[in-house]
Amino acid sequence: MNKQKRTKLREADSLLAMARHLISSVKDREQDDLDNYPENLQGSERYTTMENAIDELEDAMESIDRASESINNAL
Image 1 (cartoon, helix red, strand yellow):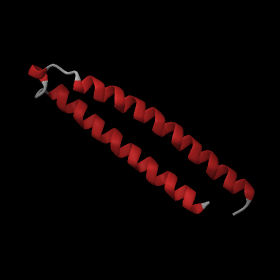
Image 2: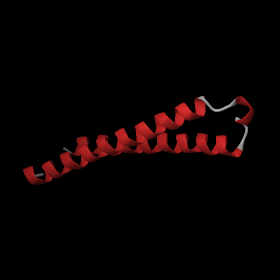
Image 3: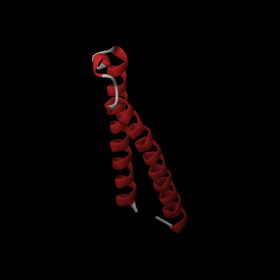
């Protein structure tokens, strides 16, 4: 792999890190909102939707971690 290709892969990895940071920030705020949700509404559809969103964001972060690892292995 030549220098130009390695540079592009490092750029991609950097963008993935930025995306992961943004997703993590949103997930943390959503988790804070969920943690502070009133007890009498914790079984509501909205609460369940928030839980599902947090799970999906965690999955997205794990996927980014795997992609980043693969890029670094290729380098």
